[in-house]
Amino acid sequence: MCGIVGYIGNQQAEPILMDCLARLEYRGYDSSGVAVRENDKSNDIKIYKDAVRVSVLQKQSPHFNGSTGIAHTRWATHGPPSLLNAHPHLDCTGRFAVVHNGVITNYQELKRQLIKEGHNIVSETDTEVIPHLIEKFYKGNLEEAVKLTAALLIGSYAIIVLCKDEPKLVVAKMGSPLVIGIKDCEKFIASDTPAIINYTNKVVYLEDGDFGVITEDRVVITRNGEEIHREEKKVNWCKEDAQKTGYDHFMIKEIHEQPKVIRDMILEDALSDSKLTIGEDVQSLKIIACGTSYNAGLIGEYIIEELLGIPTTVVFGSEFNHRRAIFPNEAIVITQSGETADVLSAMKTMQNAGVKMLAITNVPGSTASRLSDRTIYTRAGPEISVAATKSFIAQLISLYQLVLLHPDVDNNIREQLVTELKDLPTKVEKLFDLEPQIIECAKYIAQCKDAFYVGRGINFPIALEGALKLKEVSYIHAEGYAAGELKHGPFALLNKGVPVIAIVAQDGNHESMLISIKEIKTRDAYVIALADEEDDSIDSSIDVVLRIPHTHALLSPVLHIIPLQLLAYYTAKLMSCSIDFPRNLAKSVTVE
Ligand code: F6R
Image 1: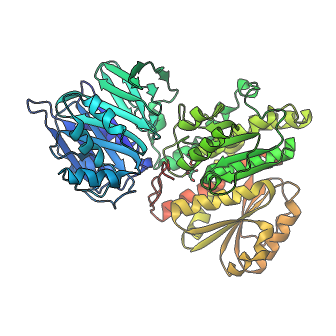
Image 2: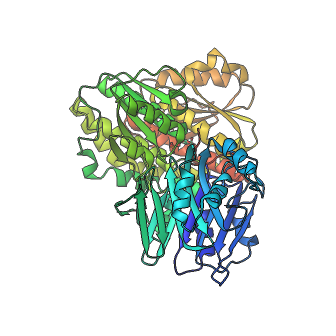
Image 3: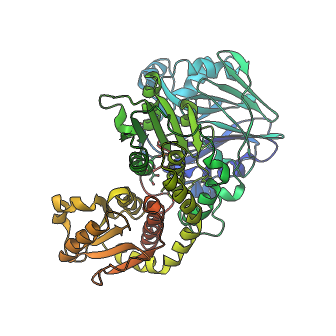
């Protein structure tokens, strides 16, 4: 779970590398480093790295004079965060520097052999074997040495190699993402597109098994020894998408972008591509996802069963290969990044079993989109905050759309839902009027140790997602429960003043939610209820009522999650937490 970048062009490399790297911190941020090939006669590789975040690296690093370089932001997997374990890694001679994202599973064996041959390996990482292997194989042709090296590596990698003797960058990809940004006499390489959209929106996505030789004005991609053409794609993201544009944090910026995301996604044409739905003869479905995307999947399960009657199960990507796989006719894979290793490994298993897959992903060209048969691209734009917000909403909208495109949906319900979907952006905007009241709730929660979220039916996953958001960014212990489950155990945890956030939707579960709240209040808990603006049955004993605009019950999760995202954000802000980059978390979890 690391981020890598490279630059070759006619500008000073270091500031560009630092800028790109800062935009990749969501992939990891326990160490960082940069290496530049000096623009003087020596062409020496100058390197600066430490167990620090990019902002600190930027301040501490001496300014190198060179227009070719590589950089890395690390999330430790092999060896703790330290100067020696930070990337870039060098060979014995200092002629080759390498940044790597992925895991080399056979590194111990390679390391033993290299040490036997006299190589001086100084770190505990799996990566360091790579520059030493390149050193061993180099006979005046960097590309050849990288290919010979890659042939020995088992595991996953995206690597960028810098060489003192050759004015180029060589890249190789297997299992970890790598994108090349193209601009006249400059080329940018990165793990993810958001890192480089400040500079170019023309990109080439590499595939597993590709090698690239990149100079200022050319990108040559080879595969199995043959030169191949990879199409240049235009990314519809703009610079501002990867900037805070006046907000304190990406998380709050992205929460506020949600009305626009919904508007962009419910364009007229989105409801007409009948290929992007579930097959008509499908008897059973599985939805595969992790984390927040899993919670979106639970809502998908609910609407698919409710509106189509197709038996559906949601499976964590991380569990799929750890139990007997009963393969469905079709699977829906939900992944913001399209790079979550657990999800990809489930996809590979399903691919081998011939299961048809529809991916819902936010990242064009991502591995999930390439492994699937069909892809719905959510139009959330780049999501930088580690805690997912706008991508969750975009996943929900995609799920509604794919269900509504199915011919078995009752026409009346389809019409109602399409009309209501179009009203959602305005209703979400109205929710932002609740911010002062939510900040007051955040002040209460910020001084608590635990918080509980309860919902029923289609809003049970919203209780899970609300709790996930709070624990991720504020580090307060939070649990989401199906309201009826409280009495089967968790009631033991309720005592005076414990905050319970209850989602009281105007649906068939309304009465039973009110009963659950009464039981919770009896234990003297502090109840914050999310209730429909038209709901006049809310008891005066409830401590805080957040009024939610009315919508169709099946769409209510979209409106309920937003106050809970805001609650998590403001609680974390009051507690001065590292909101966009919470401890121990990275946005794309590219290791299993
Ligand atoms: C939570 C969060 C994570 C991701 C999970 C899956 O806010 O962002 O739980 O949802 O790591 O990531 P994707 O959707 O990229 O597969």
